[in-house]
Image (cartoon, rainbow, N blue to C red; front, side):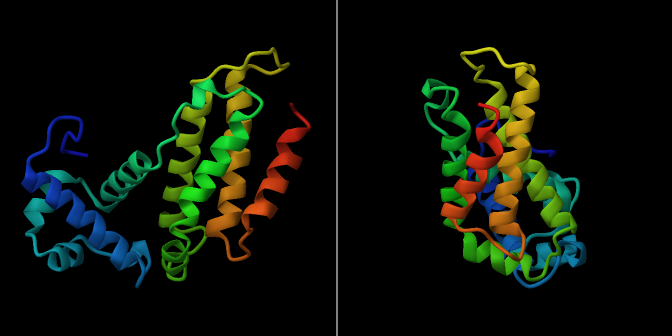
Length: 190
C-alpha cells in the first residue's frame, strides 16, 4: 500500500480509503473480483484514477487494506491471559462470532466469487495469517513434542479450515458443529 496508515490520517485520506473499501465490497456482491476494474471502482466512488493510485498499487492492494480494516475491528482482547489449552477455542469462538455478524454479506459475495477465486484465496490467506500471528505470540505453559511454531501453525490451519467451511464454502457449518469439529481435531493434541 502506498499510503502509510500507521501515521495520522487526514480526514480526506480517511474518507477516501473508507469509500474505496466500501465500494469494493459493494461491487463484490454483484460480480467476481477478477472482473472488477479500477476504473469501475473509481467511477462508483466518484474519484479520479490518480486518487486510487495515490493510495493503492492495484485491486489486490485495496483488498489487503480491507482485510487490515476488518482485522482492526476484530479485536481479540486479553488473549495472552488465557490458559494455553483454552486459547485456540476462545480465538476460534471470537473469530466465528465476528464473521457470523457478516454471514449474509459473505454469502452474497461468495455467490459471485468461487471458492478457488482470488477473493476467497485472499480472505483465506489473511485469516490464516492473523490467527497464526495471534497464536505464535502467546507461548504455551507446557512442553509439546513439536515446537510452538509448529503447534501454532497447526492450530491456525485447523481454525482457518473450520472457519472456511463455516463461512466460505457452500455447505456451511453452524457454531455448534464448528466447535465440535474443532474439539475433535485439536483435542487429541492437548
